[in-house]
Each structure stands twice: as C-alpha cells, then as structure tokens.
Amino acid sequence: MVAIRVIPCLDVDEGRVVKGVKFADLKDAGDPVELARRYGESGADELTFLDVTASSGDRETVHDIVRSCAEEVFIPLTVGGGIRSVSDVDRLLRDGADKVSVNTSAVANPQLISDIAHHFGNQVLVLSLDARRSQGTQTRSGFEVTTRGGREGTGRCAIDWITEAAERGVGEILLNSIDADGTHDGFDLELIAAARAAVDVPLIASGGAGRVEHFAPAVAAGADALLAASVFHFGTLSIAEVKDALRNEGIEVR
Image (cartoon, rainbow, N blue to C red; front, side, top):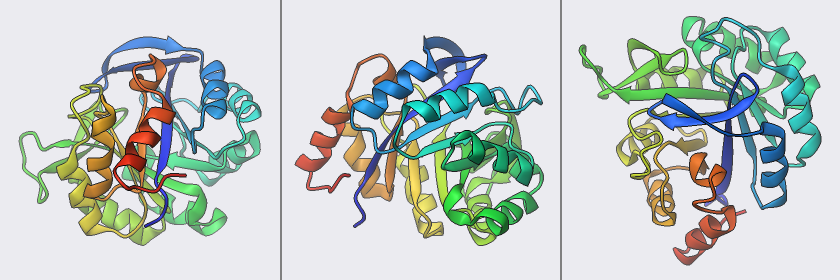
C-alpha cells in the first residue's frame, strides 16, 4: 500500500477560510495564509485550497492569496475554484500551485479535463467531485454530481462521472461527500467504496471527519488520502494525532 496522506483543506470565500455543514451556514475559520503556514509546520502532507464561490460567482480564483499561501508552504499545494481553461491552469501553476482541481467547469465541458491533461500531464490534475445521495431522479449508483459549490444538482451519476474523468486523464479524485460534510459523523464509506470499485486513480476522501477513529475506516474503504477541514481549523484534532491513530491501526503514513 502507498503511504496514506493527511491533507488539510482551506475553503476560501472572500479572502477568509470558511467552514459549514453540508456546504451551508458558512462560518469564519481564519486567515488562509496563517493557516497554510501552520499546516506546513505541523506535518501536513499536502494542502488543498478551494475558492468555494469562484464558480458560483462566475469569477477567477483569488490569485494573490494563492501566491501568498504558496510562499508559506513547502508541501504540494492543490488549488481549485473558477478554473475554466488551460490558461487558467497555467496562471495558477505560475502562482505556485503544484496541482489544480476542476469541478463545475469540467462537468459543463468534460473536454477541459482532456485538454489540461494533454498540456500539463495528469499529475497536476485533480477532479473535485461534490457528491450527494440522489434526490428526485435516481442515478445508477445512488449518488449524484452537484456543481457550483454543491448548490446545483445535475441528475448525473457520480460514479459514471468519475469513471469518465479517469478515462480523460485526471490524476486524482477529491471525493467530497455533501451528506457527510461538517457533520463530524465519519466519512461516507459507501461513497468511497463505490468510487474505489470504479477507478484505479488515487482517491482523496473528504467530508465527515470528527474523531481520530473515523480516518482508518476510510482507508479500509479505499481512500489513498484523507482530507479534513474544521477539525483541524478549530483545534479539535491535530495532524499528528490523526497520523498516530492511523499508525496504531497498522496503516503506513507519510
């Protein structure tokens, strides 16, 4: 098994890190640059920066904050939000991002995935999928793709979408469970297992972490990396505590 990565996530809105429950009722969680510095010093394996209102607000990612975060950390930095073209990716990589994450624009135009992978290689490309259990029209898997920061349902099967994305060249999949997000009740193991059965690319599990006991089951379900936000931002858990808990379960960590 490849060593498991532990990844804090900075959900950024109007220059501040925010966190809510099921993508709603967002609360301030701090300054992104300060948090980036803290995580870089406390053993995070990577850092994810998501501009959560760039797509819904039809604007670009906040490049000045990305550059400032990149200057503070010496671990891989993934940036997502508002990426609509190959030129957007080029600019973010020049800002200091190591990888980029696409979501809403890729759903609207799947060719974007192919174009980015062709120009930069799949090692820089992450598909961020905001999935929820199907509402109304049932999908094949029971999980539906949403866009615009979880605001809009698409009726499209989440597992079919990640299968297509993998075929088009994404290097990783960030699997965000809207149903579990911010609940602190544990990762959505059913969603992780369904994704793992469908694709071979690395999976980053996101949504639901509340206690150290929640992380190992996500690995058992098929996750290659574990992403969390509020439990790290507000000091409920430390990255060291999570890694120690994984080691105690016989899981190799970075």
